[in-house]
Image (cartoon, rainbow, N blue to C red; front, side):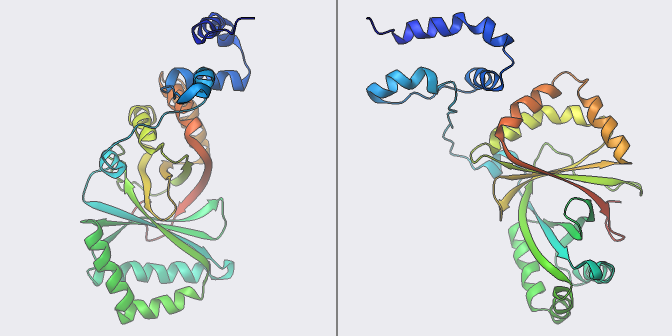
Length: 291
């Protein structure tokens, strides 16, 4: 019996495309999406000739680049730090009072750091506080601020008291996506959503390209606050911050986005890039610039 050639297999596959287009099987839909969206990968050797047609349906080709993703996706000059503090439940009020004093210290000591936003988690990991700092001038400013923070007596005394109130803490250095708006102060009375995406390695530039086109579909209510991607710390992560008047408004705005042609494509093309997604509902602290 003659072995079907690759061309014959391809013709048979294409002849089935109308049926595949109507198929509701997730695997078939995924393979169709990947095969039409991403370049095919061809293996070398005899085995590669046999498997190339089918592997092209499932394997994405990562193009080589000589430019770092930070240069492609962000504007040079500024870096940001996100702090995550897990607070002992009985210490939250004292912690917030003391952290407000810390914010004043960061200003008076000329550290060069400015607080972008500060929140406690309302829905998500309970008794968690999240703070976003901006270092205008980049890593040299961050280095100077860190030195002051580590050596100044007032900061040392602050840490000794603060650490007694914490269960755990971590931080992350991030950069701002250049196509997201700069965070601006809003009238009081808002809730915020922080959506954290952990992406598959090698997909950050692709994510940025898709969201650069898709973000316009989520700007109607000025709910888009800021978008960051990780640079040091937990890598392959994206953080999107949104602002709403209430959970009901969040529901309505998110549902209305689907009316806009193009938003469905943004979702369809980014979902395959995601490994995990975490959503937090946040409430501003009394000293947060974003109310």
